[in-house]
Length: 420
Image (cartoon, rainbow, N blue to C red):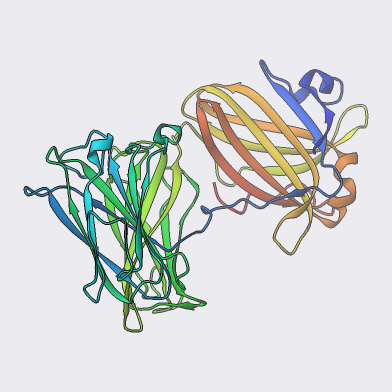
């Protein structure tokens, strides 16, 4: 836990009057022994999937079929979910128990789990009903009643799920999973937090055990919040799209900007991958996401500085400053994290920290905090890394991030070297 040494700006009055401003609150402190400063994580966490998701909307005959590739290396789970709404659906179901369709599962060899059957020894499959699901707890527009088919030892090849749907035209999500299959889809997006000027990098890696799978196809769909997809993007494994070597199973694409009029806030990315591993076809669906930050403020690149200063009464401080371009006035927090020696995982030994919360007006604003030199001097003689972040509190959002290096052997400060 961080040790708070100085709590508010009023306690800094005698030592550092240049820090004070109207409505400003400053906290400065030291990290507890053993605490670390993590590097800025510039990408979403990697997600791994052995699932495939297909949305089904009714035809005029209220019937549909879904082909389900099976690698034959795992059991198979087929989960049919009546949806209150489906992206791209013409009509929406009510999400009630009456939306549950009658389903029939046919194996690659032609064996059948009939719609009226609870299980089949031929198909080695069983049917389960889920009646106590509470979708409102998770914010899902799905029915309380759903159906799951479980195949103990799936055959390799194509299973077919035949659905006879209610006449009123409910929509469905069919989720299939091979939980023990060696074929997995890993997905991520970067940056996790991006401004309108930042490009978006999408990544997908198709793995068969520890080896990459070449020759597949990956398509990503980007959607704001819980809304419909606003764009579809093909990913490439050609060595030309920040995807590593060509044909190594790592697919990627870069998006310069989101569509015109795209909202800020949380965005989801759905990845659909298809291909073959040996003679076996597979389908996988993965997910990721990012936050498109509003352009309320930004750090002006190259203007973040660190320097040793001395007050009139002889007290010494490490002053960290930056320049912010504020487009929307409000309450912002200027965070400074000082890290020492770097650990093998990229983190650094925690040295000191400072937070300054204040109301900023529109235009260019210079922000600074002073950290007592006795908190940082030991580490600063060898050199420290300073992580600077500007956060919007009202309005909410990440306004900018930069890092700089500083050493007491230097004269003056050093400009930011990561990114705005």
